[in-house]
Length: 109
Length: 111
Image 1 (cartoon, rainbow over the protein chains, first blue to last red):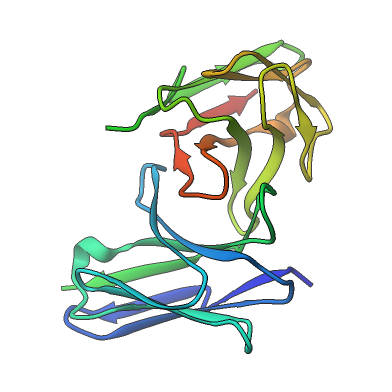
Image 2 (cartoon, each protein chain N blue to C red):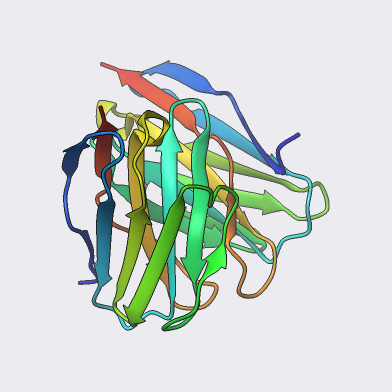
């Protein structure tokens, strides 16, 4: 079983819908990252969080340390949000990230 | 603006060839990473480095080696390319446990 699990694997939404992507992890972590990968390959970091909630524009990331669960929400989704969203756990200090397999999101106009 | 660059976006090589993939970052980061990404498998760590001349094996190091002679440059070497090494290769760098910055990726095809 992977240490970091994401759901759903694929998601199709209509423009304007509220979207939630889930990430569960089975190890102790010091932080959790959410990343976005557009077609063409480039990956950008969206959030790094270790507690509570962070917001950037229409994106909101939350984490519940006790439940070992994080969510990425997209409000008022738009076709340009179509991408693969990846969560990754930082176990401790200076160790490599452990990645989920990603959620492929398609937003249809 | 921070930048991680990779030597090629697309590369086609023949089985048995020696392949060099180069990654350069301009952020003075200590930590650099090489990943491969395959459909359904996600990002998998090949090798990483926390300092010059230092390297650590990741989850799938077999068939690969790395070189870090300068802080800004981290090279991935396929000693004898095989078809199962056809993949997207991504380099990343970070300063301690902070945001990871990724390069644009190299799509390698081994024929």
